[in-house]
Amino acid sequence: MPAASPALVPAAYPGCLQPRTILVAEALRHPDGTTVSCPAAALISGELHRLGMRPLRGTLHLDAACGPGADSTGLAVVLDGSIGMGVGFAERDRPGRLAAQLALGAWLSVVAPRTIRLAAPRAFCAGVERAIEVVERVVRDREPPVYVRRQIVHNRHVVAELESRGAIFVEELDAVPDGATVVFSAHGVSPAVREEAARRRLDVVDATCPLVTKVHAEARRYLARGDTVILIGHAGHDEVEGTLGEAPGRIRLVQDVAEVARLRVEDPARVSYLTQTTLAHDETAAVVDALRTRYPTLRGPRADDICYASTNRQEALRAIAGSCDLVLVIGSANSANSQRLVELAMRQGVAAAHLVDDATQIRPEWLAGVRTVGLTAGASAPPQLVTDTVTALSGLGAVTVTEHETTRETVIFSVPSVLRRP
Image (cartoon, rainbow, N blue to C red; front, side, top):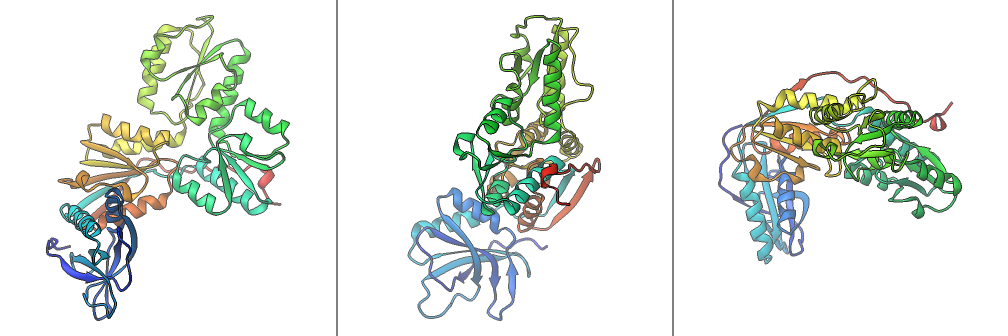
């Protein structure tokens, strides 16, 4: 793609725009009817939202005259014959005009050719796909309403999509009527939650990830032989709350090496450990080493509790991080495995790494001077969001996309037997 021309040209929107509502061009239309694609529309929309505007998408006309009665105008730039950017605003909307100019100018200032390095594996894992399929089947096959306790997986796009299909998300079971259908999330629940569901005769469908179920089983096994169980994890995470609930008071949570030094247990010779499945390997290893130093007879699972998907995504990102100026991780803020990827990138020496829900959250200043972008997604993020991000970045100049695959995932988890059709 040739270098972008900074020159803006008049454009217009053949309709009415309310004050502070900005039309972001998904396409620019020439007077002869041919169109210019605007892949960066998501980026511009995000910047306008941060400026307090209400962005919407549509087509802008490069012919400034849109007919009698038109009260909306705009600005556009064509980067080459097939790629452009544009914004429209109400003729008399001065704040909207200023915001539109600022947003368009901010993204035009970072137009440049770039390389995007994709880490693979990335995005959905088998446990997440299974949990989503469980909700989809229950909503399809059971009488409404269908409730889901907590977010089925930690991603706002997934939750919004399932809500649009009829799923009702609640924090606790007290929001679920007696006898109703409820799905337990992929993160698992405590025995107390299961007991409450049984007492109130709820129709339960359990979408707990099999790898989380394994951690619960290990906790019960260690507790049965009289051990104090140390759970390495992050306070407040749904998975951690569920595991701690296996035996409140007998399972101790530690989040880092410093907390190991403050531990007090009944019998130092009878201590076992477990880990939250979505942690980072290198940080967890340091905590386990500290536990072994303090409790030489420490026992643990035969295999690492950190799930294969978290491990694979971390290794894939580690393989590309050193060659990137910037790393973008697609995932929601409450996604533990996505947060660990950002932290891993920074430990690998990347100048900047950011967690974003989607392309609209990318900021233009992050891309100033950046020529190589590393891109991955947490295990709870839809793959389409990665594709959409690549598309959006292609609206800033020519992109060369390369993929570095460190392993091929073949794991498949079946849905619960109660949902399987003959």
